[in-house]
Length: 221
Image 1 (cartoon, rainbow, N blue to C red):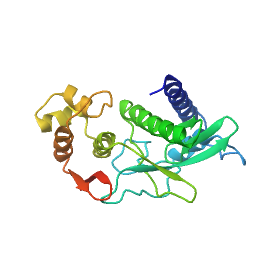
Image 2 (image 1 turned 30 degrees about the vertical axis):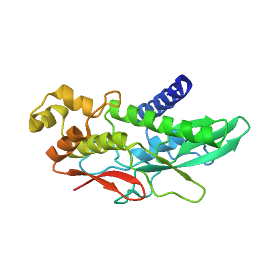
Image 3 (image 1 turned 60 degrees about the vertical axis):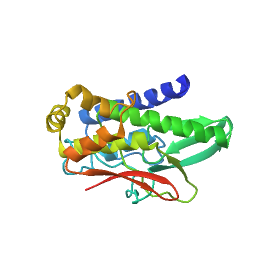
């Protein structure tokens, strides 16, 4: 991960958190017409969208997400816009307002898009926040695939948050330590897929692998 991209993600994440904190302190106001601050709009909408089983005030879906689009047998791909600007091609993810990057050309922009997508997932996981699943691509958007090893950790974290299962409780169910459970959702640690499958099984679900035109990795009830 390039240092510049990492700093860009952290800076935008800090902006997103700052907007959320201010909103909790002030009365909710309707966004001004013509505003272009995606993070600000996301914070305003996130307080309105709640999913049963999630921690209070937390949404399991992106504020810009009209529907989830994770089909059986398909890899986890996020739609992104690739916009040509004077300084290069800017990439933005509708489902993940924090994930914005740019590349010199189309090939470089796609490489940077994959990097910033993975880095953004790392931020969500480290802060134990539910990760919005990808919505269906719209006209003009390109799909950026999340590596299966990262997708498995995302599924595990989302399910833990949805069921309100703490790492200590999941460790008890698995007969292991809390430290190992924390490593299962840490992108900085390599994890055997069997252990992630064990953790998902302890939550009453199962992880499936499939082979078709593309490799797939997904969780089902």
